[in-house]
Image 1 (tube, rainbow, N blue to C red):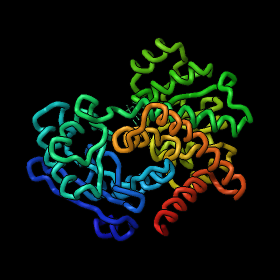
Image 2 (cartoon, protein in one colour):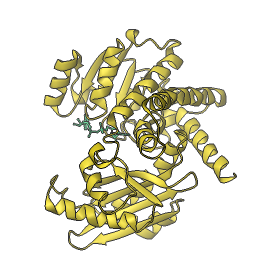
Image 3 (cartoon, rainbow, N blue to C red):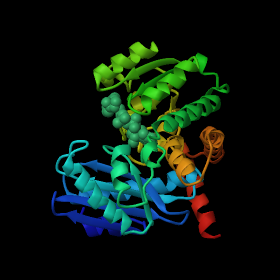
Image 4 (cartoon, protein in one colour):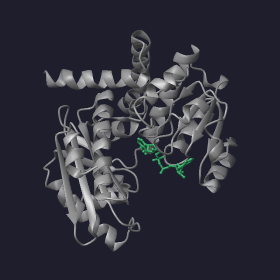
Length: 354
Ligand code: NAI
């Protein structure tokens, strides 16, 4: 689709598209909504086949952030940024640093309408660099005044979400009787495995990085499943913690689980896949609700002055929000994805109408 068609079809507030001559990169910042506060969301750095595809991604991702912030009841709106590079520059290289500083100036030019953070291929060291040119950044290292990598709190939130989802599906939240398959053992997945194992669940793991899967299995005493066998593996809970679009018209009929509840963003291929899961009798924890621990961590520690006890309560509350979503979905006979969107939209509408 052409730039103008993408923007015309989008219902967000503002999008900034900037060409960076020294690297021929494209920087796109999507400010989907500031109704509930400044638009907050991470910066994704990756190659895209065309600038239009980078724009398409940022528009879609910033929209999703609006619902994530609202579902978590945070005083932020939805935003996201993409830096479309021909090759991702090496960490700590001069080229990467220069690119990030120019990107930071773009963020600064929005005067706080957009607040950035880390996302795919960016981390706390990058946010430290961004923080040299703008104060509108979260997730810098602790040494530089930030709260660091939010992955551990994302994992805690997902764990509470799994407990609540198990309670709704099986009537009891004791994980000792349950089997959980975790796909993706990165910052979030590997920590989730630890929580699940400590709670007594029977855990299996998969990662395309075979060495990583073997190391986690060895360290935690869990079983490895081959990455290509994940979809058909029998388990109570499938926890996608790797990539998006794992739940599609093709994969849903092959799933052999009662629950899908994991950290990955945008797990549904298309919106209708939420209904497909419902028809298949699979209870789906909407991703933007269960994986909000990252934004809760950033907002809570860096802008709201929370202590650890408040953080723990807010991460546990992810389970309560999911239970509300499931009850609404049951009552109205709609998918959990649709119920979660309805809840988030009504929160934004309530703020808008004052
Ligand atoms: P990460 O990049 O640290 O780890 C991802 C892991 O998934 C890697 O070990 C990779 O080898 C593996 N992987 C990739 N494709 C795979 C496949 N097809 N099958 C099996 N394994 C595969 O990512 P992180 O930070 O752990 O995030 C995981 C997911 O959660 C992502 O979708 C991310 O967008 C989402 N998320 C992360 C948050 C955070 O705080 N880190 C917050 C909210 C969402």
